[in-house]
Amino acid sequence: MNKAELVSKIADDAGLSKSQANSALDSFIDAVTKALKSGDKVTLVGFGTFNVSKRNARTGRNPQTGETIKIKAKKVARFKAGKELAAKL
Image (tube, rainbow, N blue to C red; front, side, top):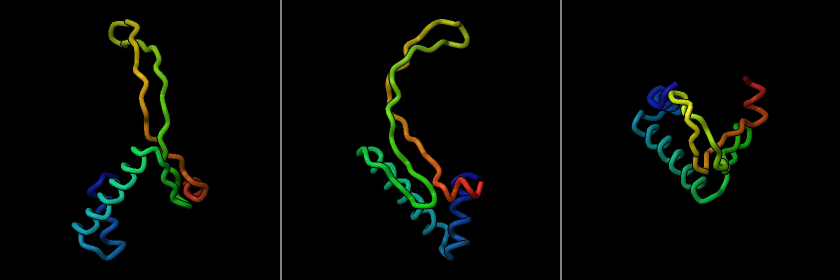
């Protein structure tokens, strides 16, 4: 499912126009992004938790040449499914 399909589904289920559903989805994405950027975690009970974790610097290998390269440390967004969502899958 891509964003356009998700917007259509939200619009149909909530009785909204597609532009209203798109605005709501964009607002949700912005709110989660800002919370993660500030170091907070976002918990949606029954759905899951979004959080940020640090990935340490490490060495890797270029698959084309076999050359060893250094991969920088960075922060990554993670999602852990909640108990109810996991049970439905």
